Length: 257
Length: 277
Ligand SMILES: Nc1ncnc2c1ncn2[C@@H]1O[C@H](COP(=O)(O)OP(=O)(O)OP(=O)(O)O)[C@@H](O)[C@H]1O
Ligand SMILES: [Mg+2]
Image (cartoon, rainbow over all chains, first blue to last red):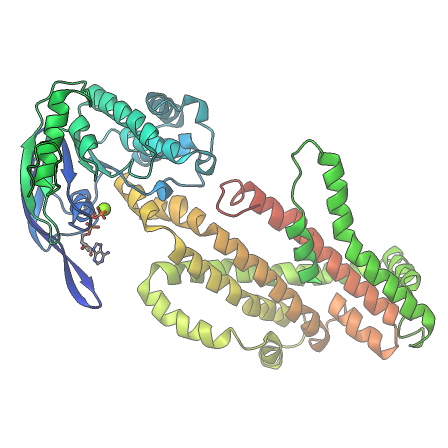
């Protein structure tokens, strides 16, 4: 819904052993309603970058602009889904978790219950509205987290490997669901992942980051028609291209780094 | 006595399986079995005459005294006076302890100010403060309540502080991104997030309150109270009255544990899966 500009962002962590670079000179633009995936080796700074965009960390240099406005801290224009299942509030039911943002906005109880139920229905959890998180499976908890981030209707959705800890089958279902949700809501999405197939399945564009200290190494547009078929020749071709960027040896044509 | 009460309750798991009645019976049996063993041994010693009967009365004698003192209103009077002091002191400790502990967890300044003080004062036995409190605030109930409040605040402070530190950063970040301001961050995230620790602190605080109260009741020259009953009975070798007093303390402890702490826990942290049942 809104464009994002990431302009020469550098972040350094202060540690007892000195400064550690999280990300270095990262720049790219994201169009309104675009779905962008960030991939890169572990430790390259994907989570760091996402946290800077979310406003939880202040960059040492450079700036982020969302819809033209410089980011100075967290804000309700951005919904965040973390990798960690523990992000849900254990003391609130699924419905209570999803209503949280609406409650903070001061929306009346009846109305926020209605919206929260609708969001939970979207992620296929209408039967579990009154369950506490510890009675839900990991995949269900992540779906609640997605519903929670969508419920108060932020224009940007930031997701840090939300499905990384799920088994392959659940993960496929979740990706399908997310693609549907995105099609329906047209939010601007930044999605961090390790998984090349996942990136190609979901993204309009894939940003490839280099190993630590992370910088943008490649910016690849994925023009496959949606819904995408992971078994199609074009999909597999895309996947090979992306893996080459990541420095993997690609079997078949033997072209590697 | 407090410890015994806690152990009993911790073992008892609510049965939800088909063989529910049977397993319930078994768990009751498991809980009372040790008491039966101790009771039998007690009777053997009491009847054998190793100690004079006055100093080591049989269980029937103690029970007789217990009922007689209950019927004539003496034991309930002692118990109520003690309970009022205990709960007043404990309420003070709860309010100040939780507030200071949370402040320490939330603000660097409060932590720097309170942590050294609390760390030094906490390990000193509660009784050591007693003469000081009696000199400052005089003999009587008031000093006892202040002392109980002061001494039992320490475990509450420590645990509330730890609880706030243990609130997951990811909850705070989630709440921030959903627009929680400071006040609602506190009531909707920090407080429930720290609750398992706060409840532990309150439990420890109550145990601490008992320990110091029973002793201080004698030193503070209060006319009524279980501590006074127990220590006063020594002069007249009324061992049966002493034991009756101890039984009342155990019963009150058990009731507070079962009817207050466990109810609160089951309704909150256990239901939320933050603490195992
Ligand atoms: N809290 C922190 N304190 C100090 N250094 C940190 C901190 N968090 C991350 N780093 C450093 O910043 C770099 C980037 O970390 P980041 O977590 O952003 O990587 P990532 O790309 O998300 O990795 P992964 O794919 O494993 O999640 C790492 O090299 C790490 O050492
Ligand atoms: Mg990461």
